[in-house]
Image (cartoon, helix red, strand yellow):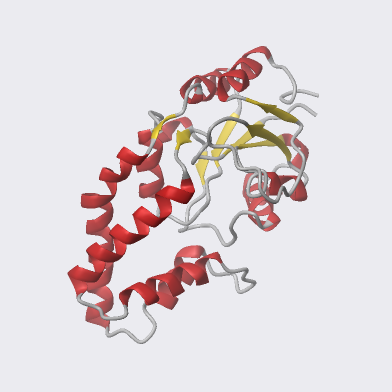
Length: 242
């Protein structure tokens, strides 16, 4: 079956970003900025509890956004909750863009996306849905890629599951109305992105500086660099047709 949809990871795949180094810096700056703005004594533990609730396996149908905010806001007065919401938005608009310094363009990423568009593939930005969509689009801009290049984006406003849960991929397939054999997941993480294979989706593994090989969830049908992947798309080579 010829693949018609490419599910593409962001961090470490399209954007050069070491997630293990980026996340502590991000969370530290978020806690410092919002905690100072709202003067909430238990802000940091409340934030981490909300993140944990968002990442937990759930069967209640809540989106990541709903799980995060219901936990974070528990027991807060309405005015305090509103103040936190405003502080979060200020952080993402005023402070978050400075974190770009911890990233770098991924060689071949823009060529890959352009080649895939020319070849007629439907592109879905299948990034971990733990950020608001506008924040994901900010990080995509750091990669030098316009959000309009993608036909869909997974974000915390709409997703109910997270990598490496196979249900994350099943939800994408259900939304697109396609069979697993019509899609290919492209990513740099053998666990999180490789979990697509547990939902029946083939997996192409991006090797290189940002490759993550711990606890593989499935075997890739293709391995190589991002420039090599762009070349494969252009030529219609495996794994894009079978």
